[in-house]
Length: 461
Image 1 (cartoon, rainbow, N blue to C red):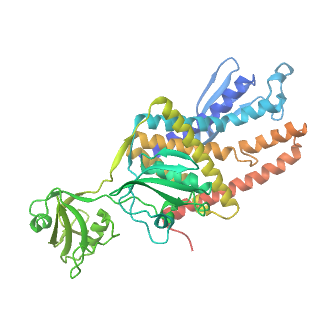
Image 2 (cartoon, rainbow, N blue to C red; image 1 turned 180 degrees about the horizontal axis):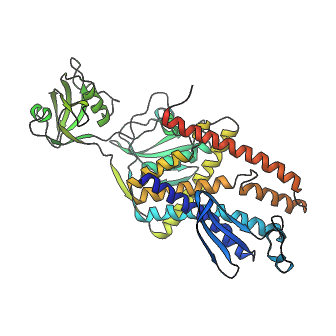
Image 3 (cartoon, rainbow, N blue to C red; image 1 turned 45 degrees about the vertical axis):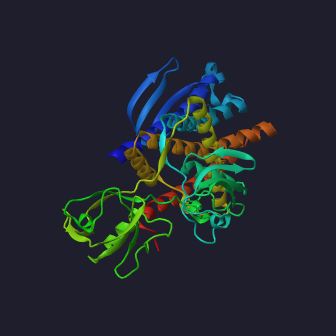
């Protein structure tokens, strides 16, 4: 129910903002608006408002909306109202009305990003894990445990407060094919590393971009919050405050961690416990300044559903080191505008690489994926949900500005031709282009739906 509500609210809000942009721009030009509809199909709510009797409608299918204006191409117009018809306006005014919808979505994204920044968001600190050999990060000298404090790209130095900020900054550099100077802090103090991203432009925007560069968050230390009374962990001598830094199977040497050499994480420990089949595990434990070696034998337990699990009886805390990023109003608006610009450019470049075959089409997402993220973000709290709304609003604005007939960007292309050539695109040509645009949009929807289904059921073969 939370996923459904969060998804429907997101759709209604973003569509309403988009259509409100068209509506307000039309009113500012003196164009008469006949109907403002959120959704398609059978009207659920309907009311006429204002001196023009504009009909405001909430319809049953919330997958879009429209603003219907007075237009001679759709129905006869009384002579006294001709000056208020959309088709009688000059191309600059028509372009303004069309562009105002996507612009409203982009403005909403700026405001939402700014609002989240003002509320304050808890984000992981940019504490790096050891990179895989052969990656750009390894070549730059990145080591596990280093914290990134700032980045410098083409002389532009910016502080790094969190991992998401670092990720966005590195994607920006990769898209431009630039090097990045990382200011890091480790046991030796503060110093600079040069990360070469000139060959990474094709990967920027992909989900595994940072991992392919060799950058990932250092896993949080596996901290024992409590060793439950009478359970295996307590009997083995584990205490609250102990940090488990290594796990090994029976017969292996102490300290041979199941995961990367720089840090064991809780997921790896849980996997080792599940795979133990009741055999004793050899744990390397840090207690204060001392290192201890503990042997613990997991016990078999059955849950309410009759499923058997191996457990050691310890409550673990594996939260990443984090910080609250909070900005003042002016700085938050600047940050919101900058992030909207960055993500818009990233989206356009990623779409461009899809067109030329340099990026995978599996990055396209449909309504199932969007609904899933709506529910997940809403479950995490208000700030993550507002951030989700900002990203989707931005995507809606960018998508509608693409120069594809049927979309707002396609109409802007017609008006640009009219302004430059001083003649309109022939109606017959527009109709053919509309058909091609519809086919292209249908193809994009089909690919997005396939990706949605593949994410749920797995890829088809």
